[in-house]
Length: 236
Image (cartoon, rainbow, N blue to C red; front, side, top):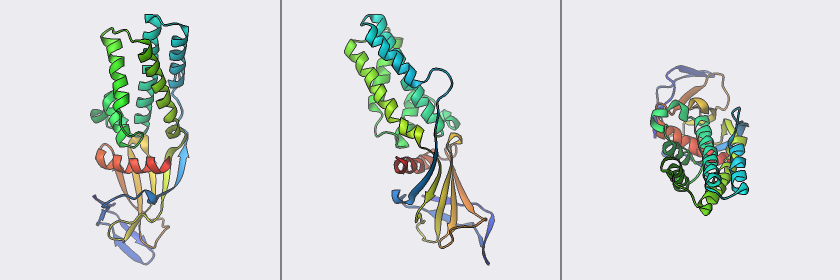
């Protein structure tokens, strides 16, 4: 993985360095990602994911008629879609919607970013929802219960990504392959799909003149997702 840092001239003590080099990282090491500054990713105004899940539980508890089963699946589906859309937007998809606009594409984004290993089960749930809503299929009670239970597990599992929403990441011994440069910190502007890597020569840890590399999902989705996946993994 090769990329350039900023083209400005930077001053470190008596030495001036023109940062027209390329940094090279043949791999990213999880041990580099050290201290985190995080915030809380809240909910949008109005009905949220947890409320839709409560509606779905009430639908199942109130009866097993066609109306109850269909409403349970529909409400759980709303919780699932709202959670996937909220998280994917919060972590950068909203600036790359041409590539990640559909629900399956958003699932793929979250999976690539390390939120969960494989999206197959959630994709199957979405297919059941499509059959119920678009082909007028009546779900069986077991299918409706499984749908609600799995969505509930998923929404609760994603809470950690709301509670520890990354703002900054302190880096430890994050050297490029030449051993001449290290990343001091990553500033995260995730809703804008940006990761700003603050870079200094090895041996210098603080300076008012920083060089940096900004990785944007709109410019390089694969590179952005690679770095984001390490941030997510180390943060959880």
